[in-house]
Length: 165
Length: 141
Length: 131
Image (cartoon, rainbow over all chains, first blue to last red; front, top):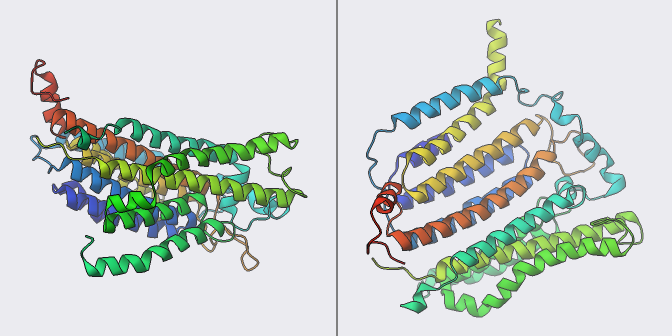
């Protein structure tokens, strides 16, 4: 994944960049699968590698450009990046280690969901049950966000240029 | 791409299976990985595949624009409607346990309808965005 | 800190290092490249690194996916999965809006390079701008 991202950053042909981002999404989906996140992996594969790539390609067709050669050497952004890396490494040093059963993330609500699932909801897929039943309000907000984005795109691209010419 | 034989045959073979898989993911979201979002995206991807191979005009005949636009809104209304049904039957907003004979059956029913609403909205929005991008002509400089 | 403890601590935090690298790569693409479509690609890379940041601490080695069944007792934490599922769909929605804006900018200015757009804006209002 790291190699994919580095090549993507240096490449100037936008079509290659978009195809590489699709490959990167697939790699991310397999990594998520290795982390036991099956629902998330399926969503990332279909949304990130499917819909995102299609939208990028259609936007590229409408814009058709190639990235211009950068005028300045990117020393300032590189310096900012290195500084942020240092800060982030310092910050994440204190976080729990990988696969630590005593981490706080496993202590509060998750055991209650896993143990009470049989009595309260009785749906084997815990993620669906939490998404639709325990955290139903969040999903309502998300559906509204998706609808709003669709309405926004409709408002932005409404006037069909093809008919006006 | 309509005139390319291999693409046409492969598309005709694959699209029914993609639609069936989308429905499978939707209804088996309770027992395995899946649910509303994945199913909506897969269904939209099937129609986008059809539009890529056979042309945008054919796709607009199969799934017309007013249908897609109303699908966007109907999904949100179904979701909110489940919440209002919970209100009317005596509980709080979006309470599922009042919807059936016993709390567990009510939960099943509520989760089923909520996922259906989510899938309708997500597939409608993805398809509508694709239609908007693909239907817009290029402006020559 | 002794050498061995430092090395085990380093090994335990390796997922954070991967996340940080991807995050910085995405951030670098956003701030250092001028093309608008490439900036959006960098933004989506940044978003996927945040997914990894949330899901990696939830995994338990020896556990399984959070689908209840008789054969397993240890499950990975389902709560980050729920949050990230929402985040992915919202991310693609904002991506669609961003691309619609890029298409409109292209039609109004004639190019999608950040420097050229700023130069066009700095010129006095004349006929180079299309409606």
